[in-house]
Image (cartoon, rainbow, N blue to C red):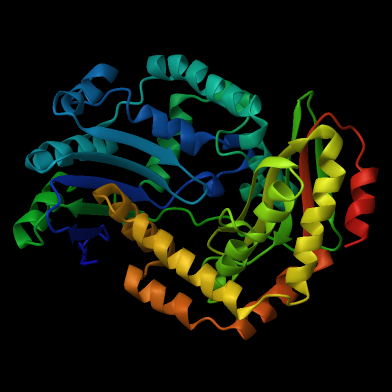
Length: 424
């Protein structure tokens, strides 16, 4: 993977990544702000603001004007809000790069944030919240984060509560935008059929000349200390119970993060993994069962997630805990580790086949870590991890005092589940 990084005088970072024989170009703006930068009273403001960038600019005054230029050329475009960053992107045929840069800079620098459009968008966002509320498979993750982090920023939903959405006003959006959308925490990444040339840098500099140059607020510090296991049970009349069970982990800047990713892969990263075989293939307890190592900059977790029959939930938890225990006791073979390494490296290659994939890969690392690993460098890191590294990390992380459980299903009592965790 080829790329070059530039930094303008105002602090704006630019990444150019030419891809041989690629006919598209992706322009991505990634801003280092998200729900982690919010407080209880304005929780959801990052996501609301993301929506409003598509509701009219000085040059494209109506919502349909904002999207029509890219629709006319067959472009793909979208935006997203996470806990630690917000992104805006467009992927187009390479001859339309100028139009795309004009569009991207226009929505980021010239949006009107009309109160009238805000009032309409409130209903849209409330329905988006309802979508998550009605989907236990999606909502369980946010229940898990709230269990780990409580009222801290990482424990708050990205979409915010309905009350905050309904009470939002233009001043709140402008205050947040003017504080958080700065050159210093913004990365512009172009990937695909682009040239690494001074003229392109000057062009980007021209389009983003008016970006603010202040100091954005820092992310809220997270206290992730834990004494005993915790359980969250949300009662919902469902035909299937959804659960996340796992352990507090480490942050993405921890050098052992790839060790933890390998452990997660061994547990539930593919159809021949331990959890898939034990929970689904041998016992038929779940249709979906998976594991994940979840990383924020300074904290994280490693979990198993499943949807199981209501009457089988305790059996399912017992089986998952048994697999956790084997990991904690170091019952991992060199053969399993080698398989997990090859799987991770192979999936990495598959995940970087398009210009938008590459742009996200580069910009995310730059925003969150201010340092970019190439796929080759990452593959080398993964290859060097030893069985000793994996067993040491397993003993440390898979500890009873890091264990937690979140459930959504037709249950009102925690006690039966507390007894299960006590036996771990």
